Image (cartoon, rainbow, N blue to C red):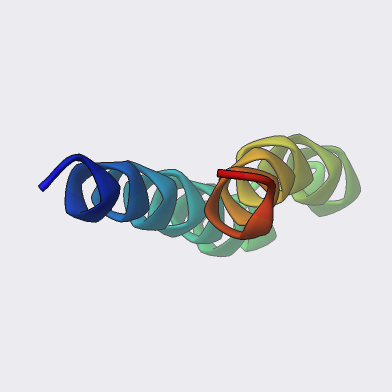
Length: 52
């Protein structure tokens, strides 16, 4: 059960980063928001595939 919760949190982080990415594309500075979106996406992927 804890592993499923950990993967759910990782998926939520990646989803939040993707949301920031697409929302940032329509902003006044899309390059900045793309860089900001990479932070939760990277954290989510590393936590999903990192050591258990």
